Image 1 (cartoon, rainbow, N blue to C red):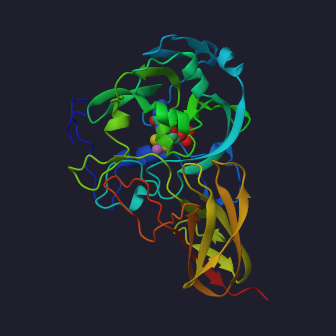
Image 2 (cartoon, protein in one colour):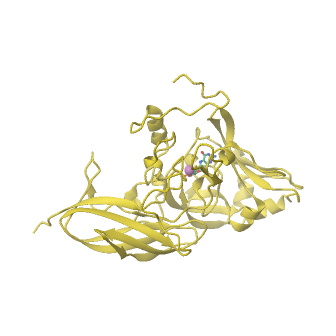
Image 3 (cartoon, rainbow, N blue to C red):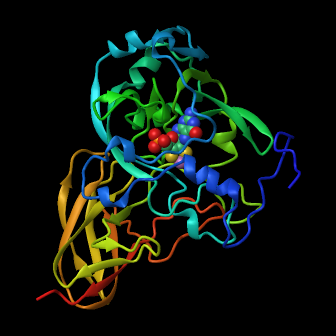
Length: 368
Ligand SMILES: Nc1nc2c(c(=O)[nH]1)N[C@H]1C(S)=C(S)[C@@H](COP(=O)(O)O)O[C@H]1N2
Ligand SMILES: [Mo]
């Protein structure tokens, strides 16, 4: 394809149904996912936390990094990393999920990260709350939006931009947005936003801007590419769509048994098996139940408790596995009665697919 990707309005490369292009594989190699075998853990080991980076990872020096509060503030100011680390400290486990998680089955396919299940993880984030810092800069009465801007710059659809997202004053009041420099007791890694990012608990990951350099108060609504041109649920080409915000209720199962290297089919010996996994919902809404399908029947799993308001919860269920091929599935329901659909609720970009996780297992006769 000879289209100039830097020209205004450039289309994305075409996709061939069923065949992933080198460009898509290149994206997938950069933006790695979690290993589902870690789903027995409350905290995702840092090296297996999923990654979603649109452009190149900016390599920033914490020693001279500055965050500036700009725009419609009466008392704009700047903070360096030393100032930020001296602010009141909060550490919380928060589950992040990419809005594109589960996109892989969307048809017709669209050009983006072909996530299956793995773009989710929970880390203990350390930082300080953003709301008091915004107050300190004294936003003017006219302020309608706060834009959070990253240091990463690139092109999409012929539009050059820094990655940026915004939150309204009401959203800031509702959400416990954190300004974060630590992840699981260590400084942020470059690929997770070092030295500074935000975490917007309970929302899909796109809101949690990495490599944060600027917070701008705006007297109108922020019109950045990542805010208005994408991350919207659209059902057809002419639909302007609705913005993605809170995470939909979802659960995953730690795949039982062992895989075949190439087919990834799972194998296990007959007998007692403990099935386990994680379940989460957005907006701080707790998980009420997780059901696991064994054959044609759904069984109520035991919830093992979540560590915090915005972190996933564990679940487990004992299973007497009998020889044969079993199609397992898990389905979570949250305290507001939202439950996972059996089939993907696909929009055009495959966003927010929270359909049930299915796992097929070959159970072999037990050795006697
Ligand atoms: N500056 C910047 N922030 C960003 C992104 C990005 O590409 N650039 N990707 C977003 C998306 S889509 C997600 S899902 C999360 C992923 O965070 P992680 O890579 O630390 O898991 O970061 C968000 N913040
Ligand atoms: Mo994402």
